[in-house]
Every structure is written in structure tokens, then in C-alpha cells.
Amino acid sequence: MRPLALLTLPVVLWASFAAAAPEPPAPAAPGLTAGVAVVDITPPVGYRMAGYFSERLSTGTHDPLMAKAIVLRQGGQAAALVCCDLLGLTPAVTAEARKKAEAATGIPASHILIAATHSHTGPLYYGVLRDDFHARAVAAGGSDPHEQVDYAADLIANIARAVTEANAALRPVTLAVAEAEPSPPLAFNRRFHMKDGSVRFNPGVLNPAIVGPAGPVDPQARMVLVRDAAGGRPLAALANFALHLDTTGGTLYSADYPFYAEQALRASLGREFVLVFGTGTCGDINHIDVKTKDRLKPDEIGARLAAALGQAKERLVARPSLLVRSTVVDVPLQTYTPEQLAAARERLPQIGKSGEFLKDVEACKVLTLEARGRPALPPEVQVFRLGDDAAVVGLPGEVFVELGLAIRRGSPFATTLVIELSGDDPDYIPTKKAFAEGSYETVNSIIAPGGGERLVDAALRLLKELKAAGE
Ligand SMILES: [Zn+2]
Image (tube, rainbow, N blue to C red; front, side, top):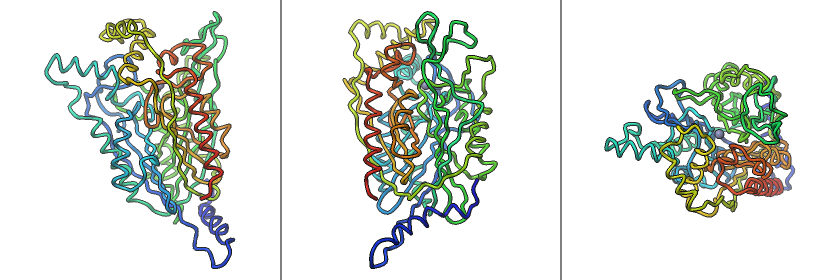
């Protein structure tokens, strides 16, 4: 970590730019303020858990699930970034939470990013499988013993509360960026070229039929560190790393490896430090190294991630200048035939028990498309400029790493955090190349090939606009 005295530098630099203006003397640069808040979103024990294709009931809590919010304000600009320890979010939840948060704080809904971390040890509160489990429980017993709360309604209120409380805790801050590559690596591409010419996801460790990975990784972890301008105490960091949050399993609620990363960073940054984890584009990335039987555990992953980020050199964000842009992209959805729909409906009660995984996934996809009932998704791409050299992008869905890399490489900002599962969870967002290769993620995707590349184009356009825009 850098000495604290240096951390007030961006304000000083800002002031010196402003001071270059002609007479009369320019007013002090508009200060950057931030607030942080955390709200517990753990459902009751016994609620269904998300992440897999069969019914799974929670039996307890390893670590509570949280909605964590950072609110930033500078001059007339305001933004909120919220990350929730959940597999995903629905557009209904995020739209309502943003509306409530805007009403309470005045932060425009379009300036509020709400993302899920993709923890596979959180509640199953939406989707075709949840709807089926719930309907069957109600049919059997008159009510659903595993849904004794309206989780979606509670979640909306809790997210809005997190934004409201963060907005009430505003104080002058400085922003710094830290980037690091954990070594040995934590993230692996999980799609492989096989000797038979196919591409397979998770083909199994030490599988002799593996030729090599079918895609890259983004090995770099990044964080934007928010420090109290008076004294330099670290309040929070928005971290970003492209690695699937499915390293825990079991039936205890847990935020997965970011929980351990936060615990480890608190040892050096203080007990009240909050790690807001914005999951990177990890649609095709997990923690399984097929070259060894040794599997990384969530505590090891969190500790190594924290060690890499904690030891990384901080760079002050140059000339903090908050500005937000967003756009809605037309992403066509896949189509299905009446026969496929009939087959999916017939299959629904057997999903998770049939032993034919990809057929189960395909049935879920067709039923999800039917439930969405639209020819296209209207996904929102949000971009937040933090300063001359740092920006944050929010995209919906489980985005393939190549798409996130394309945004980071094409971005005019030196540091660009790309957060997936923002606003909506339309399952996987593969590349056109992956659609041609097939396997699990392309079956578990509702978008038509090319949709992911459209999101990249939109993000790059907004990044360039924000780079060119004034304050
Ligand atoms: Zn996933």
C-alpha cells in the first residue's frame, strides 16, 4: 500500500487543473464523495437454493448473503453500484429496486448498476425451475413450505435500502486503482478442444482426450479502492475478477470466494472495509485446472485473490470526473418450434433426474424463451466513468471472457472493470465462435449468435463517448 499522504493527490491535481482557468479565480474543484452500505439479504433456512438443475434446500448459513452498495457523487453527477450475493437478478427486481432507490435518493435509475455475483449458494427465487418447484409444492400442500417469504419483494426493498443508506453516508473520498495477476493462476477456461474434433465444457481432469483450451482467460484482478479523503481509511473497494462463483457447493448459504477475499483484505485494510465484488466476464471460466486432481477451495481462492490485490501497487485515478451513460441494445433471441415446446413441457418434471444433462438444459432454455415471450432482449449496457483512466462497464448475463477482454482491450481507459450479470440474467452470452463450436453454455443461452458482440460494440461506443465528453 502507498503512504497515506499520497492518497489525497487526485483532489490536488483536480484543483490545479481548475486553477488554470482565467479570472476570476475558479471555485474549488467539485469534490468527489462516496458512501458505502451493506444490507443482509440472506433468506430463511429451508429456502430453495440456486445454481443447479435439481431441487436443493438450504440447511444453514456459512456466511450471510449481502447487497453491497457504493454511491458516488461529484458535482451534479451521481451513481450507485450495487453487487448482490446471488446467482442472478431479474429485470423486474432490478427495475423496481432502481425506481425505489431513485425515489429515495434522487440518483437517476439509469445511473444505478445492480449486479449479481453469481454465487451458487444463494436462493432460487426466479426462473422456470423455481416456478415448477413452487407450483408443485402449492398443488401438493396448498402452500409452499420452502417459500415462506416473498424473497423478490424483500430483495427489492433491501437493494433500495442499501443505496439509500450508502447515499446517507457520503463523505469526501479518493479513488485509486490496483491491478494484479494472482499467481499461481486461479482461473481456467473450461471449454476444451477434444481429440474427436468437438469442443466440450468441463471434460474432466486428466482426461487424455483433451487437446487444449478452446478459449483464453482474463488472469488479471482489478479493484477501485475508495478511501476516506480525510485520513485515508479504506472504506470499500469495487473488485472485478473473471472466475465463476461456483467453488463452494453444498446447502449452506455463502457468498463463495469473495467472502474469503473480503475477510483476508480486512486484515490489512480494517474490519469495516467492504469488498464489493463485481464478477468479471466468466461465462466460460472456472477454477478447475484439468491438469491436476487438486481442486482449489473457496478459502484458498479468496485468500490468493486478496493477497494479489492487497500487494498490488495503487494508482490514483487521474482527474476523477464521474459521468454515466447507458444504452439499450437490441439482442435477438433464439427461436423454438411448437414441437420443441411440447417436448420441454413434458420433460420439465424430470429435469435434474433424467441423467441427460444437455437435454434438461435445452428444455429449460425453451421454457425460459416461452416465459420471456419476446423476440428480443432489451439488455442495458451501462458505463461509468470514474476519471481520465478508469471506467466500469455493466453487462447482463453470463458473458464469455473473450467479450470482456474485447471491451477491456478496446477501451480508451487504462483500467476498465467489466461486470457481468448486471440488471438481468438471460443465461449465457457466448461468442459467435462458441456458438459454432457448441456444448453446454451455447445450449444454456437464449440469445441468438452475435448478441454478445453487439453488447461489446455498445460498451465500446459508450466508453469512447465518455472519454471524449467533458465533465
Ligand atoms: Zn454460471
